[in-house]
Image (cartoon, rainbow, N blue to C red; front, side, top):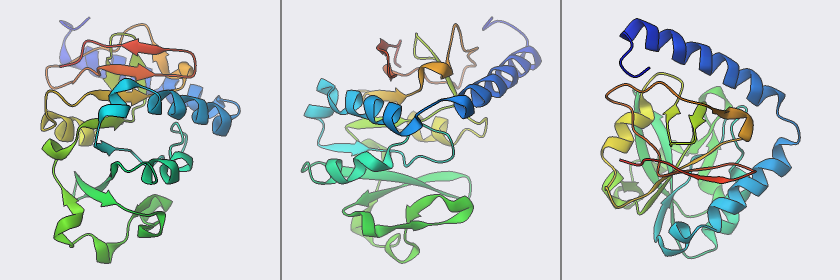
Amino acid sequence: MDDAPVSELFELKTAIRKQAHENRRAQLEKDSVSEKIVQRFMDLPEYHVAKTVMFYVDVRDEVRTRQALPAALASGKRIVVPYCVDGELELFWLENMGELELGMYRILEPKNELRTIESKRLQPPDLDLVMVPGVAFDRNGGRTGHGKGYYDKLLQHARLDAPLIALSFECQMFEKIPAESHDIYMDKVVTEDAVYTGKGR
């Protein structure tokens, strides 16, 4: 499948994204299932040893993470959240929930006035562990996002020893995600049912 023409890969990914979105919208009890997934992430040995951890802040039907942020902030770890500027993801050191506000598309983002504080601005190599969202995954750590490549760009600059761990509802898991040369495999994919070990980078 990975040797298929680019147009065929695009069509396959588009079909998988469409199905994954439908599956995710239909997911029941999103709050309680998300809590189980995030707790499983926070129980991982990779989380326990990491000092600086990136959490994504959930939007729409993603696995919900915001309910776990207060506990993560209280843990003594440096918690980092991404936000989008001109098609690129920037990283923000989050110290309390009051530093977030609803931005465009009602997405929780760092307040504008805090983004220029130099000590708040981090770079991908600063991360010891990266929590990754996505639209669909497979058990080898294959991932597809929304197709805009925001996370691909960010993850290319993460340290090789910083695990990439995706959160996913089981309904977002597919047999195989078609991969292109720029796609990055996850080290693990955490669902409500299992922790799948991926190929990694």
